[in-house]
Every structure is written in C-alpha cells, then in structure tokens.
Length: 403
View 1 (cartoon, rainbow, N blue to C red):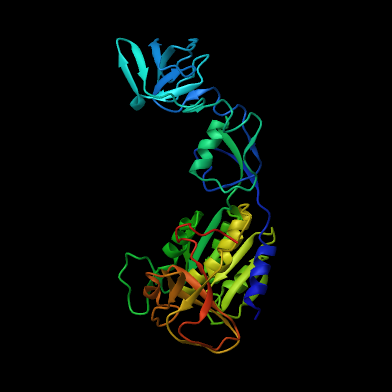
View 2: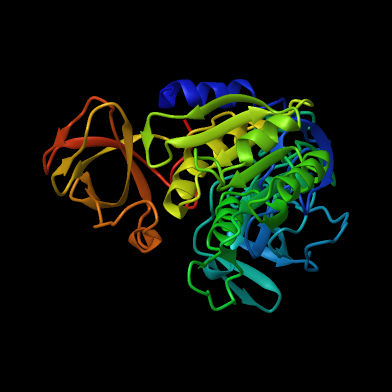
C-alpha cells in the first residue's frame, strides 16, 4: 500500500503527453491553446466613435451639420472647426475630427449644432490600434480557452486554433449483480449508479466519455471489453471488481492484456482499493472501487488531474484552502481521509460541514457536498473549530482555479 502523494505522483508521471490538433473556434472553448495567437491587424482597425453623437474639430460652440456617418460607412468626409457630422457608435471618424460630443450634451436648431460646453480633445473616440497592435500576442500558449478568448481569436483573424486534444475516455462498470437504472432490482441486485455518476462527473469537469458500457464479472467478457476499448481510447476507467474477492477479476484480466499495474492500494479512505496501470501502448488505466462515493472521490483526486495534464493544463489539482470543521471527527492512524463536506463562508472564514454518512455506499450523503477536506494520515482527533485543508469539487463553479 502506498501513500496518497506517491499514488498521485505515479499517476501524473504515467499520464502520457498531450497531443495537438486544430479545431474551429466554435469548438475550441474548454481546450488549452497549444501556441500563441497574434493579431493580423490593429484593433480597432480604424479610428471610430465610442458613442452616438457628433464628430467635431476644435472647441467652437456652434457647428454646421453635414451628413450622418453610420457604422459600416467608408465615408471620405472631412471636417474642420465649425463643421460637425452626426455619427453612430462604431462608425469611422471623419478626417479632421478630434472629439465626439454625445447627443445628450447638444442642441440642434435648423441644421446647426449648439453646445454649452466642449468635451476635451480625444473624448469618446476609440483610436486605431489602442487595444491591440498588429502582430501583438492576443492569446498565450497554455491558455484555457473561454468564450471571451473565442471572440478575441475572431478579432485577430483566426477561424481555426491549435489546441491540446482532450483524451478519448472509455468507461466500464462491472458487476453481475448490477442492472440498468430503469429495471426493478431482484433480490441481490442493485441499479447501476456508477456509470451515470462517472460520465456526469467527467462532463461537469469538461471531459466527455467516448464510450460507456457495463460488463458482467466474467473474465471472458471483461477481457473482450477491455481489449476493444483499449484499442479505441486514450484512457480506460473501470469501476468495480478491483478488491480481493473471488469475483474481482479486473486486476488479473488487465494484466493478461499486458497492462502494467503501478499500484493496487492507497492509504486513503474512501478508495483504498485503487488500481492504476499502463497498457502495453502506454495508455493510462484506472481500476476504481465499486462504491459510488469512492468512485466520486478517486475520480476527483486521481482521474481528473491526469486528464488535465493530458489536455495541456498548466495546473492539475484544485487550489487548496483552509476552513474550520463544524463538528468533531475521529479516525484511526495510517490513512488519509477525504471528507465530503459542504464549504460555506461565514464572515471572513470558510466553514466545513461534514454531513452524517453510513459509508462509501451512501451517495445520498453527498447531495449538497461541494468540497473535499483532507485529514492527514497521522491525525486521529479533529475538534470542532479546527482548521483543515480543503478543495472544491471540480464540478463546483469555477471561482476557483487549479494549483
């Protein structure tokens, strides 16, 4: 049995390298940019009005009006002191104009513009290149792309972007006793909560399962399923069948297919029986425990960091915070405990509420949970009010970055 830190290091050390692909900007959000993006033009590309109003030159209070300039015009109008043009937001500035008077500060009588005061030179004008210069880097390599970045890429003249490809993920749940969610279980059967749990947890964290299937606890069925999925995916995730029971065939079947097992158990709760290995082609393989809470925690702590690294992220783990636990907690030495908690602000500090739970099969205890608190392997007694490190779940909205 190895420590949590050793297991996490082994996972990241054997994650494989990210691959680059080109995608259109309407599909690039959520990916990590693989190279810098430069603008091919100045932004704005011309001097333009920032407001609806009147383009003037100088500080006269009376101006004769010319024709209106609207957005999209390529007008060659020139103005000089005493002459003004009505102008719309975004319209090109006429030659000679040095400021824009907003509509609310003007009066028009008989095609003459009268002003009570004149705005300063440069008022309400967006000058060519004031935001971005031609050739300037607008998006840096390693940026995790958002909707704002897509708009900037378009402004920079890019319709396609080089990004790190997200890994193709295959998910398998195991268990002869497992039946689909819509079935009424017979005695000894349970519904398959793990498959939708895993695929949804991946999706909420920005990843998609290429395929998700269930297999009975039968070496032949498992071998055929694993062989097929290893051929078409980059990462294989198996849930169930990884302990030491007589029907836990997953480790031996994986080894029969050439998978090298890097570890089988980790000094943690939940999720002590946890397999991580590499296929003959170097593809990461996870064997998760069968209980759904263990599945949720081990995906958070091991699977998602690997997927982030394979996707080119700069940071892989959620940022750590500290909060005060609201109740006492007791444990035995030797294992790190991941406490599923509800983290909330009270004044200037975080509070951590640990809901009652009947164990790692009690998924109902996680309904409102938004974070995991970490109790060290040598910590035995935690009193209410003591501080614990914690991080938010990856599915929690993203005020919180990666370390």
